[in-house]
Image (cartoon, rainbow, N blue to C red; front, side, top):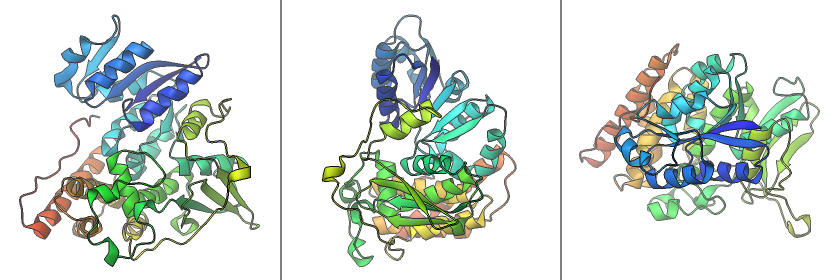
Amino acid sequence: MTTVSVVGSTGSIGTQAIDVIRSQPDHFEVVAIGASRSVGPLAAQAALLHPRQVAIADGSRVHELQDLVPQGTEVLGGPEALAEIARHAEVVVNGVVGFAGLPVTLAALRAGHRLALANKESLVAAGPVVQQARGLPGAEIIPIDSEHCAVHQCLQAIGGAQASSLRRIVLTASGGPFRGRSRAELSNVTVEDALRHPTWQMGPKITVDSSTLMNKGLEVIEAHELFGVGYDAIDVVVHPQSLVHSMIETTDGATLAQLSLPDMRLPIGYALAFPDRLPNPFGAIDWAVLGRLDFEVPDRIAFPCLDLAYAAGRAGGTAPAVINAANEVAVAAFLNGKISWADISAVIEEALAAVTITDPTSVEDILDADREGRERAATAIFCRRNVPVAKEAAPASLSW
């Protein structure tokens, strides 16, 4: 029986992880769940799962949660709560959204556990620091993002990420809701338009990231950190059917791909059970009705966020932390109606240009870069709209 802690349990990844775990009650036991502030859903999950611990990052809601969870369940609250429950299970699912997931990532790895990682931002922003923790005994990362999970599966066929026969990684992108539109046609798109993803059901932040291709840009940086592959050997292709989740190419020209229907339960189950596989056929394809597979190059003029991410990745140091922070602020401003969709990339570019990039050696260096990226993005938003925009501080749940 493998013990599991699901952090970000009330979100899309967390709820699907619980579905997978409940489908295999003889294999997995949920010992802890946690969320930022969703008391009602968290209490309902506690009643269903009876975990040993329930954590809520919003400390002001601890007493409310205590009145709702089953008797004997320990309730943790405050900035350190989510990281705390990442220290006491064999596998930790990190489904926290955004930079706030970094403490969970570090806590799981420093405790020597397997990290089933869906929070790409923590690895993108704090790659050098996360790599130090990843080198500790017992610590390992199995990616949940469908693209990186696909690469991980393909690499197993050729001996792992360090295989000398690996030539390049090809990440696939659905193209989001705006595939095929020109830059001019994107000037007046609405929040509702951006949230209308054609394939995946995701939270608003990641859905907007998909619409700008920043999600794919962050995944390029994540692939570099996960697999140790240089940026010149990581490509992106648009694949609207979202059936080929990513590919690798070997030195002799062979391409290996992982295909399945778009169902996040497959990569979640893979990360939980690795190196074994679950008996549930999540995402199985009916080849008799598959139809066609299409691929095209991304439009880098209409979607400049992809190249901004490549530039930040190649710059290294704190540049990925800055671009991640600026993107979070810009997306929040777009969702709140303060800037247009087209302004998102402009705000990120201005913020990145305004920050001095350094080589981080500690979490504090990453926090400083994150803070400056947020401040520069807020300034760029203020200048573009000439209206007061509050500086976006790092999430209150961060604790080290």
